Image (cartoon, rainbow, N blue to C red):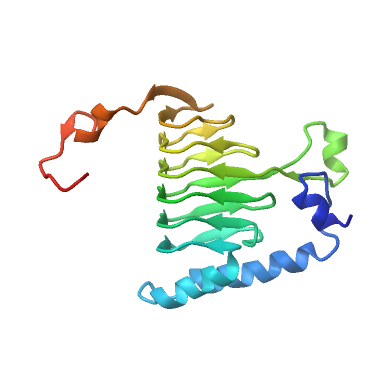
Length: 203
């Protein structure tokens, strides 16, 4: 098993061996190209994303600048939107469902290092995958740590650090992120806190 195989198997690996530097460099060339395209070059942006990322659904838009390690370990569902300064460290696999929105400065970190200094200084690191379900909204400056699964229909409040799995149909916030309540049918009529929709075509 080479170092890339170890990385994708969520085992300790060394990031400078077996062609991993070259893969990251190739990804960074595409990231650089994407981040320097004209804002109205939508077709070119999409073409670069489809070349960079492992899987891209229909209607996917990422605002530049965007950063990732490999790109090939990222799978995006349909109708994905990421606002400015999205960072995805895709040492481990990142699987994102349909109808997912990221506010500015969202970061997904599959990468990590051992806690003990001698183990950490050995050069071994790891990547443990992140999974995000359908109909999820991550607020600004949210950080998702390695190994986390976020369920369907979840809202994560701005500034949260998600260290543990989050189940379906909840609002969660904080550092560390904690569930504050379920999302219910009553929430349908509000667009912000206690402010009700004044239109009828929002359903």
